[in-house]
Length: 93
Image (tube, rainbow, N blue to C red; front, top):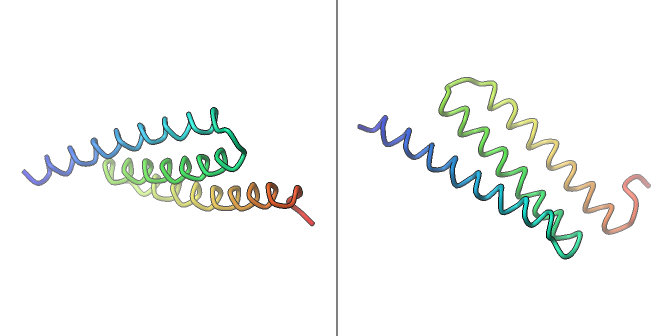
């Protein structure tokens, strides 16, 4: 019984994460300012990382966890670079 509940909970969370990613993509395309687009991108990579983690839990392989770690690192660095670019107009001083 608890295995069925776990499978249903993971499937439901994946559905909600895909819906959240759709909302983030909409905000990235229709954002009125560049700051809104950067914030939507930040939320998008967090949702993608969580979606990969749920795939890893569902399949039981460690490959998805490593991919989620790579997405988290690259997403953080790119968000910092975009924020620095919006603040100063250049990334490397």
